[in-house]
Length: 116
Image (cartoon, rainbow, N blue to C red):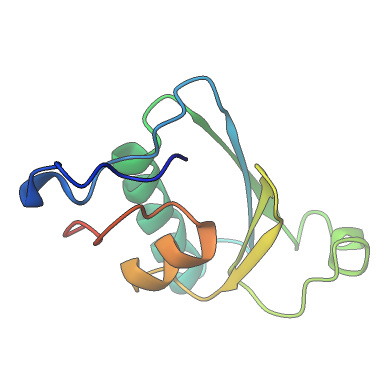
C-alpha cells in the first residue's frame, strides 16, 4: 500500500487496499459449524468483499476433519484466522466481529475503518 495523499477527501479515508494485482491468502481454522466459527466466516467474507474484492482466497480448515493441522499449524484456539500472504504473517483469534482489530491485524487499513 502506498501513503495517502493529503489532498484526499475525508469521505474517502476508508478505502479498500490499493494493489489490485495482489492476491491475499487467508486461512480460517474452525471446528465443525460452531456458532463462533460460522460468525467468523461471515465476518471475514464481509470484510474481504469490501476491502479485497476479487483479490482474496479464503481456505477454511475444519480441525475436526484435519486434526493433524492443529499441531502442524500451531493452532491453540478456534476460530483462528491466519493471513499468510502478503507478509508479514499475522494471526487473529476470535469471531472477527471487531472490524478495527481485524483491519489492523491484517494491515488492510490505510485510514479509518468503514462500518461493516
